[in-house]
Image: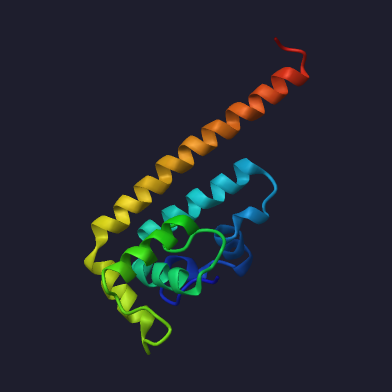
Length: 143
């Protein structure tokens, strides 16, 4: 996914954009987290955040961050929009525009889902860190 024209990220080199929206290609877990955090921070500053989020939702992109939202959050937003009657199906001639309007009308839902994703991600990160520490500790001959 590349930056939307007029977005904060659109002026960044494509290599950097690719890393931000597909940080899973970075082998280092800490590097992945840093790139995701950077992407989210840039999205927070961007005037095109809802447009990018709508594009990420509609394209069903399977990796990275779009509009400050990870994949699971984008899936939840799509389900919410469809349940609310937003016309974002393949039969709609302008699904992106309709979704952008819906997202702008529901900023509290976007914030809620994003907060939920961040707290879950935080727990997962801590669990991974603890598992890695245990593995190192056991390998070093710890109790």
